[in-house]
Figure 1: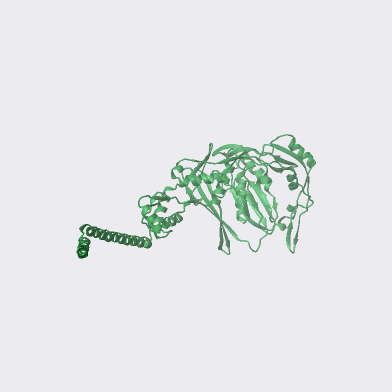
Figure 2: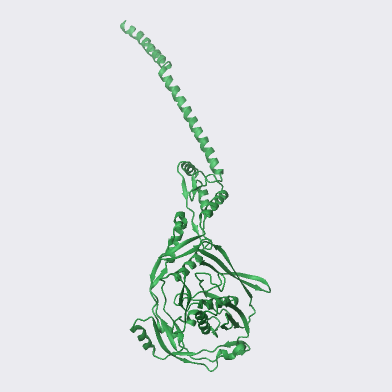
Length: 515
């Protein structure tokens, strides 16, 4: 019986247990609530992600099709956010143009001069700066670009445009300033005075460190506040070149040559004086090395040709290529004497094709022994009496005649002040050992310089022979600006053929101090 009852009770017990499990599984309220929360959280997560994706897509589309500069971008501390490239450049150009002064002042000790920023074409490269601004938020993938755009909303960036200028023109300006320094280096030189070769020693001095000064000027322009104070010229000490008597001998020594010319083809062969040292080369070397002197005189043997160029006269130089005159005050005897001495040195000079004329080598040092007198000159911005004062009028007169003859100017420097005898940018100054005036005979035939100083008129004539490619030359010079301290000017050479302009060439851009 017991076994039978056991068999009967077992299914009932299992049935009850199974039923309870089913009841528990079907009606557990805690598990049902958890399931509902999980479903809601999942839906919210999906919804949130969807919204983010939509926002990201809209943000990406906006950034992709936005052609303006993004927010938070500044150029030279000017906010260019949301501006088009053209609007940003226009706004920048106007702002920077007003900020840049007409000129900057550079100094070296007591020496002071100005540099025109307009003449040096100084400006800011706003085009490149705007292009750089446009690239912000556009150079990476969509994630990088969007992240950069977002970050710019909270942290601004500033782009500094590069300073651009006519480097060659500014270099030339600084090189000219170098010759004007009161403590400038003086190079050794030489010239022939009668039957003597006069060799002058150089002097240690300063020259403008062009590269360093360029950087200082660029830095000052980039930093507007620095333009309120003068910029110190960077200089470096330079020793003059040693006197090379052997090289001088090679340049000076020559045999005499008679002048002659041929008609078919027409060729001129000018005369040349023979020159040789009266002493040996070794004696000349010993003279210079034995003691330190400012000037050495080496005796010369001058051997004159039988036929000089002047003897063949107008047949050798049949055509007047150019002429130019300036007026001087004949009542100032000292100054007139200086003009005559310089003119007499140059008068009759013949230059062969390709030959270069050096004013300082032809005229020589302006000394008392040579007969020069005290007359007004410019010294560090002041007018003072100085030996040889006035001879720059001869230089300026010659300069204009050379330009009108369409010869090649190889070295020319303007005065500190605009002289009274020519207008701005029509002058040329010289300082023995420092500043020279040089030009080259770039014609096919020789030329002859004829100079006279008389009756208040200094005149130069250049003779030669006309060529098929000759042109008419006009000079156009004018002021380009004027400030309280400086005058700025330019000069151009205008070439005409048959009355029509065929070329226009810049002669110079110059800066003068105001009286």
